Image (cartoon, rainbow over all chains, first blue to last red; front, top):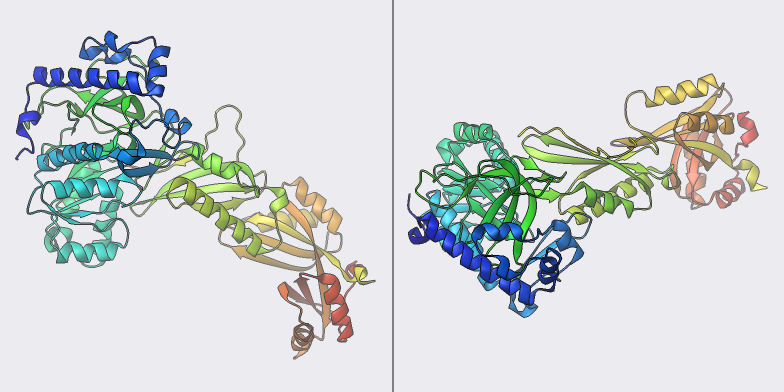
Length: 433
Length: 143
């Protein structure tokens, strides 16, 4: 398999670490000088840029949290003026306020470069036709993969998500060789193709899939290969670090985190202390060259481990294992992050409801199905079924707006949903990955 | 004057799942409440059980004790002839009087058939129905 940038991808570890140290030092000085937020954070943590004397000193720097983005909505953390921004992406936040990420041209270039390396490492390149079946728009998946695929000279088929039968027809007619989408959507496409009498293996040229944005497993990888003849590669990223940004290589042995772009750390989620290589814990990301929304030690909330030994592919950069779970109660519904706290926030704003709710998540076929049971406020009850249907629609609409994903809503009788003393367990997730 | 023709319906919000109606019916039986007329409106996962009963206050309190959400709703009940054309006659009166029906249900008993109506302005509807020669039930007729 070829390299996109062999000089950097095969760089000896010591040399790579020198670059990381230089970039980290520059970043810390820049933010200490120009970002009120980081300046205050570093003061609070009693750390000065001069204290960063080795790469390992990164552990002295304070963490950054999702709540920092929420508290500084929409753009108070940005370190570039609006006139330097070329794009926004928006994802759902923890308590109703969305998270806004701005990008300078250089931010987009780095994101695209990262993807160009990753896609090339999976054996995709010029001559390939990549069907991008991630959602286009405020979500980072569609546009991110779009530009990454264009950068390597592949032909992009920007189908976005949905209208599955048409996707399958276009996959056949335009001879797509690769697809980028969520794992569950890929399986959905496989099942829909079968119903249409189309064999992905025999009737299409599809051979690889770049899948991510939601949890999946080795079992799923085997199933995709056996039923569709498609080799599936894991891709990782969140909007805060840019979007889907890092992927596996053709060895399928962990996700390469390009060291000149980001520094991954694993910490104990309870103590915040760094864990030694090979230990399983919470992933913390520092993105080294971001301009608009810099990220130092950002606690994404995903659990994984760092694989420190060199990859058989020859690339020297650190890898992380497939994400095994979350430190918080965040759910991923059809590739979109959903916080139960955001559901609660939305529901508390609807006077016709009591405020109590339960979330039930299932797989219907291969797609996630999220049901929110809400409880009627006694005053809002009506003998007219239309009034009740209108309340249900209002709740569906409010939740769709707050979460960026469509959910089912069920009205429950006042007083019928469980009450919790202490920590509420409002989520029942019956999915198997 | 029209007040005596306004009848209290009990409206019970219920999730649409097995056993809910049985629970409502059992509660009414145990408190010796007789049901004159009854309907269920449903939308997927929930519904509204509506009933005319002889003792609405008793019905409400026993159902609320069981955790049901109960409301009273004002309805009117129009007598119909229990023969072909009976419904047409009453429906014609309502139509001619320009009364819009939000929902309706009916029963056909020993003495007559009755059409129960939920309308937005019950008082006005009563006047118009009477003016057109229609006959309405009083709440005491249910007792």
